[in-house]
Length: 126
Image (cartoon, rainbow, N blue to C red; front, top):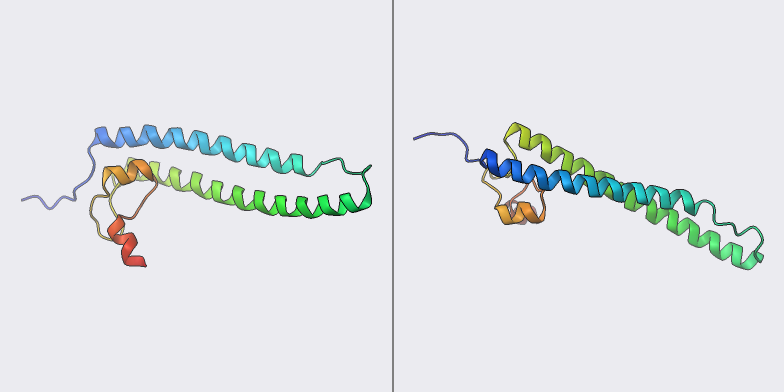
């Protein structure tokens, strides 16, 4: 009997790697769009409009900046989590629940490729 931990095959890992790289490309592109939107929001050209409208627009602009900042932060974390998943693939530890040590089902990893917890472990946290 071997006591080696169960893990995904190299073929499976390469399949996950391709999916994750594709998601990283899309996520980095989305982050770039969020940042460009943030830069564009800073120059709305309301200098020649009425003071009332300008005050309203500045309030909306502040809210928009906050939302953009939150969105950018979430997107940066998502990219970081995906890149960490690539490291786990290289280490051949990808898909192993960090709490139970069991293999995370492939369906879950396809839906959430950066998952580090099985549903069982996630439910234990609640």
